[in-house]
Image 1 (cartoon, protein in one colour):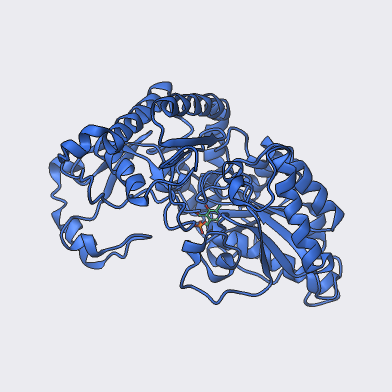
Image 2 (cartoon, rainbow, N blue to C red; image 1 turned 90 degrees about the vertical axis):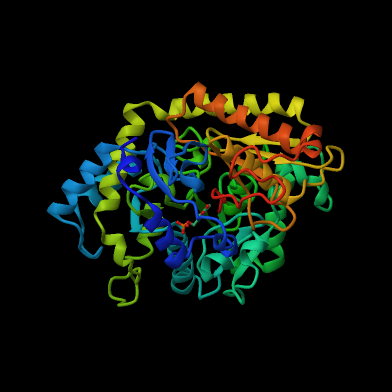
Length: 491
Ligand SMILES: Cc1ncc(COP(=O)(O)O)c(C=O)c1O
């Protein structure tokens, strides 16, 4: 850590923040009497706040983003060099790093070949929705315009993306939404008892079949695309049940429905393969990605398509409306692709995909061991370094614990210097899944430190002695009125 704390008084920064910054996804009333948290520095897996307190970051910047860890000088150097040579030109023209990264990216995505640059996950998803709509108008007499999305999935914050939003608390009060988006049921096996008719056997196929039912009810000639997260993130870290993806693929082929996979969280290593869908052998038509593409060193998002999708936008050059009439001003920034190139080199050279698989397995094992000790852990799920632990009040009924208790666990970990996440303002009554997504560089010690912290937190929040001795263990550790989590696990 640099010596910013020794030489600088940050009190002015805190006051400026309190007076003028509108933070994301957080209630500001408490900041009238407590300081907002400011993260000042980061190195590897660790960050330091304004008090100089060190934290191990188990959520990669709060929202599964900083895949290669903090303080990567080689990315900063590459970005600097690029910016002084050529920082920006509209995406109607090409750029050197844009071409280089696109070439490298599609090498990792057999079957896909075209990269459309923009600057956020929401925006990338909007681009995909627009492509589906334009294809519908041009090729299907305007009929195949509907986009299916899944209960508990999230695709972004804009009104268009929220129209495909399967998290009702995230959507609440922001409607009315855009027409032409239709919800299909979730595939969370742990909660199949809440779904009418869900079987114990072959649940995955059943869950996929529910998509077909929706297609048939709406009319297959009206459905243009199905948009899914390979592993649902902020909706509860939902890994797909066995047999699900095979059936989804069959259904899409059968009804000529484009498969759009939202890899904004899973993409670029998070699950231990370059992309989450590659864990399941799926063949998408469109893939969107953002967060981990450049690990937050620059804003970049991509929509990657097959050549077949691309061709539909140039096959009638006499028609002045035939091409994709879309622009993203900051999609022309060169910092994004140059940072993404270096990010990818680091993942390759440091063998981080394998590390993710190994450390992810260790984290799941550790969480399962904790589940033997703590009845509140009802289910442990995950793929690679993308893990969740669903907390329940009762293992038989699977009733979720109170949201405040889940937040108290997060607050306790924070007090111990470990930042974990929890699903938050997502699915009503289901904000009860702890989220873990450390950087892909995590070591066995890091993983054990994280799960040890959870062990301690569960013991204190649910153990007998805390109610006997509701002591404030640390200055920001208030179990009865927990601080709001800074790792909100959106998405
Ligand atoms: C799966 C998923 N898709 C899309 C988004 C939106 O990305 P952004 O916040 O970059 O717009 C998120 C953000 O959390 C996400 O988790």
